[in-house]
Image (cartoon, rainbow, N blue to C red; front, side, top):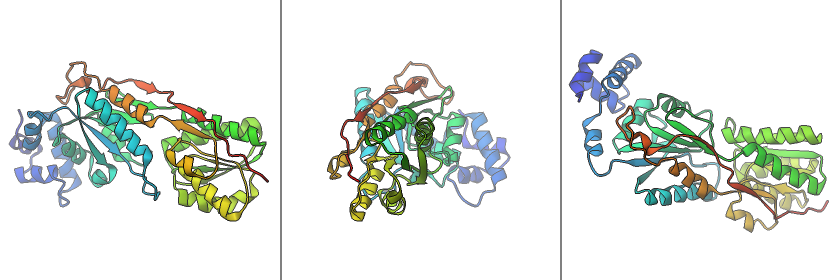
Length: 338
């Protein structure tokens, strides 16, 4: 097994420099970091703290990596359902689970993240809420240090699989149902976060519907925030026939604005969260089974007994591109008066 001295010799630096790189010290040049990290990869070096953890009974952990929605004041029911589904499935499979938030690793480079996770005996990762802007996670997936399942993002390689519903079709279906029921033509579509994979898929569904039904489609970014959706509804809903929102939280925000303006427009959402039942009006929505989706992601971790290139059991995640159909249209309808 390679030692920190071997890494230092191969990289042509002092042992203290290797230690600084491993611990993410800021006063190390990018050139030196690259040399040390290349030596670590070539020697398959594992720091002592990591080796100790992997030799303990804690080996075999899965990290749930979540990007919390900081744009809302509501408790994030979706993430809670994701966590519950993963943890309960992990218990069935006798796997240990820890939760890691994006904010805990956002200032680290790839090797800093790798060392951070390996120090906690992590062998597999389930990533939730990833966007096109999360370049460091893109690189983590690309370099295949861990077995990874990504929820709602289209990443597939020998060590990575994707689990998601068909967001494009689901958005198309719920919007078409609402539009046909209410016979509107001018649509305000409040989309999710810019550069989000889910945002693009749902917007594609709306664009397809608008083209087929010859709709006037006005798209504005709501960032999955009920507060921003409320502001957008105040600004644009009066001149539109129907408001379609890419999430239930935004639908609730839009509904609040309509009530405050004392006007009525059909509104539909997406997700099927419990709060929709307290919105005061009935709305069409897409009910996702977040618990089951997350359990499916964890189920992809059935062990096969093979060994991966990092020395972890390669079967911790059994990789496939699993497009799961776990959604249904909620039959509750918000009928609006003009």
